[in-house]
Image 1 (cartoon, rainbow, N blue to C red):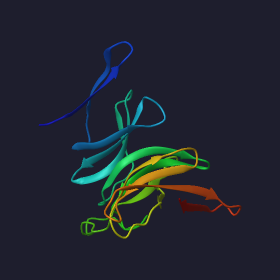
Image 2 (tube, helix red, strand yellow):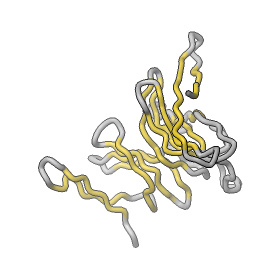
Image 3 (cartoon, one colour):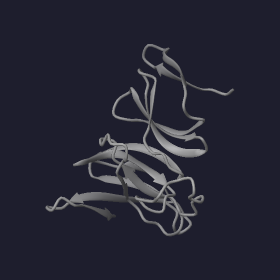
Image 4 (cartoon, rainbow, N blue to C red):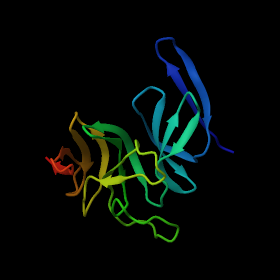
Length: 178
């Protein structure tokens, strides 16, 4: 029985600060730290589905953020004015795509989405940030206070694109691509 083992290396003191077995997922595909050195965001496989998880190192606690049939890859924490969450690539057709066991595997390209993690309700708000018809949008990340970037290969060559949010007076968020 294979187990996922993780350790945290304290570079200054030169010792393994934590040695843990992560239970509840079959494989970890990608990981990044969140706001602090105690919280890690995972893209991991559980029961054959790739979803996003938040892992608290000190508590050895795993929280599942997405739970659907679509693939979620390259998760990164972002914090923009009036908006914080996890930005990621997914092959879901839209932000409000249905998700149940009768959905066929997705033939849709990967696009960039953001999930609101400050909302603690059972249903997380997901926002679509790119809309490629061909190719895939991958490796999204925050660029600065207002911008995010991603790599898209819509024309067959991987190019880095940037986008940003602007909040209107009416309170609506608008997404712009540069």
